[in-house]
Image 1 (tube, one colour):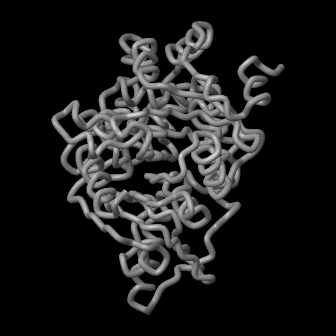
Image 2 (cartoon, rainbow, N blue to C red):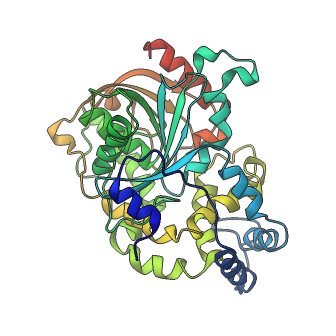
Length: 400
């Protein structure tokens, strides 16, 4: 059955008058919490202890489950998710959710923020005010951006697409949204994980509109059979790193090849979904000096999980990995993203590692390269101050 909002979007796909409010039904919440409370934990290996060597730590997850049942307040977090204007629309037949924050730039300096898996649009929440309203914290209004935070198709509050959507197509959707939907003649984009791949294709295919790219992961990546190495030394470095990465890619192969099998299990088990998602949050976060509980509070972690659960997006988010196979960059053909690119390199980027700069510069127009001394996969959440500062400096340097 077509809902009123879906009909409105079909009638006028660019209706800015179709705002969206997060308002999950109580029956949906009750169903999720019933299954959380009733989850039956199995005994872990006898030598697990406090380690995560077998995957998510059982004792840690059980404590998180107890907090989930006893103290976590979705309605409180729902109010946080509704702090900024947001919309649902349909672009080229694909439903999209986005948040639009017109900041102190007053609609003149748009910055698109793009997440990946296992992220959501919520991972940017703690940097919104710094980016859009810098004068609130003593900064200059001249540094402000207008923010468009997009939920990738099948993620979060972007309703389920009918089929997997590849990154290059997502780039076309985002460009269409920005130029034809929201009326921005040009824009800057920031992305990590899959968002970095979308950003790369935006710069490659839509350079008339996408004027600058900022990433914390390289979207076009080498592979074992096509690494694009310049010389034997670079080939050795790339191949060694790619081989080291393989043990961490079991999840990715499952997502790409048998996503539905996994999804059918995770969709009926909120605690199982939490384990699958948070295992990667743990492993991809820099925990060399802090524990996961010191980096992220429990409300943030559980809200990330709940955004997948309340929308049944744990299923369709996995489809995105099938989409990754649709438009691979063929390095042997020498693709080149000519749009100016800034790379923010964090040392604990263990999945989607950063190739040597000499390699990157043959495929990207690198104009800024920043290396932090700490941080991992989730730049905006782990190192928010450095993330904001690097975006500001980059935009200033290129006159954006």
